[in-house]
Amino acid sequence: MIPASLISVLRSARHVVVFTGAGVSAESGIPTFRDALTGLWERFDPGELATPEAFRRDPALVWGWYEWRRMRVLQSQPNPAHLAIADLARHVPQLTLITQNVDDLHERAGSEDVIHLHGSLHRPRCFACAREPAEPLPAADEPEGGRRLEPPRCSHCGGRLRPGVVWFGESLPVAALNAAFQAAGECDLLLSVGTSGVVYPAAEVPHRARDAGAAVVHINPQGEAPGSNREHLLALPAGKALPELLREAFGA
Picture (cartoon, rainbow, N blue to C red):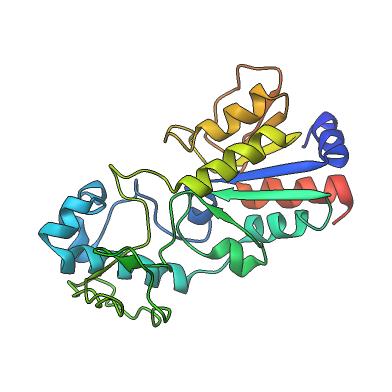
């Protein structure tokens, strides 16, 4: 049951920020960093593969892992949470979607101008010159157990392509982070969906919204009761909570 006060806040909101994390993609079957790996990858800690040092040491191993992850994304479909977020944009005057996820499920659900704080599996760049390739990557077709795979070469300088994600030890893209912080400071409602809120600086986004006077709704089945009267918790899966919010608020 969605509290009537939250329905009222959503109906009256002029600028809604939706801030999503791994829990949203997990409902489409995409493994999170906390999930146990299988096949070739079960011998590795994901955190050890997601660093510039790992890529320098063994580019084929790291590229193979990220191509396996990209394949899993391409095999997955947007779930009711992704679709509800795209639909919500048609019911409010302004919506800004900020995600920590590196997949393209929001875009495939119909969302536009998504701010990707941690980059994208679908936009590799050169490890040497940082430019993106002229052509998109072909569809990933990897064995389920994974394999080592030599990275393609940059069409500009001949260097190796690297996954277009933010690795441990790297800074978030400045333009994306600034856009996220600006939207958080200007919104009157922020929906924090499927995120634990512990990975900084991204986790600062809901705090900035709350401190600027916005209502903040945490949608997380494992969420903890918030400590502020401006914050609310819906301890439900995103695929259940978001469609229900839309139905209650807009009859959608």
